[in-house]
Image 1 (cartoon, helix red, strand yellow):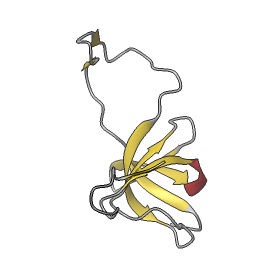
Image 2 (cartoon, rainbow, N blue to C red):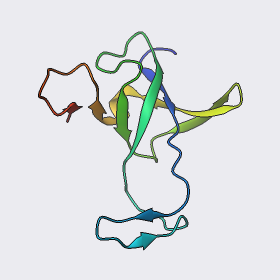
Image 3 (tube, rainbow, N blue to C red):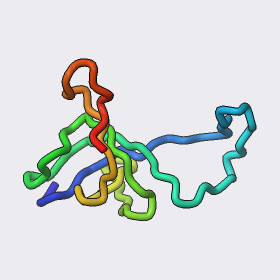
Image 4 (cartoon, helix red, strand yellow):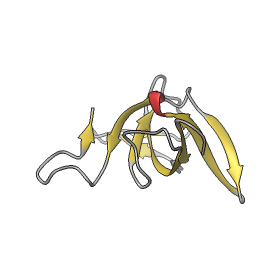
Amino acid sequence: MLNDRLLVRIPTEEGERRSTGGILIPATAQMNKRLIWGEVVAAGPNVRSVEEGDRVLFSPEDRHEVEVQGEDFLILRERDIHAIAAPRVEPGGTGLYL
């Protein structure tokens, strides 16, 4: 990866979902402006706050898809990340940098 780029595994959200109230949401329902989580697979040398294995929150509109060895990934810039969930945070913390 170059500069501030991140290689992120595409989340596999298949099928129907249920809301917290129990309402069934079909797979074809489109959710506008909904941020999604993905796992960082690789990071460029100028990335400062994200490491491999972190989960990152980003907008699906700010992405570029790429296929590597038959698997689909996303390339994002570090500045397009909205939050990071990382196990390296201090004990008792939430694990999120917002």
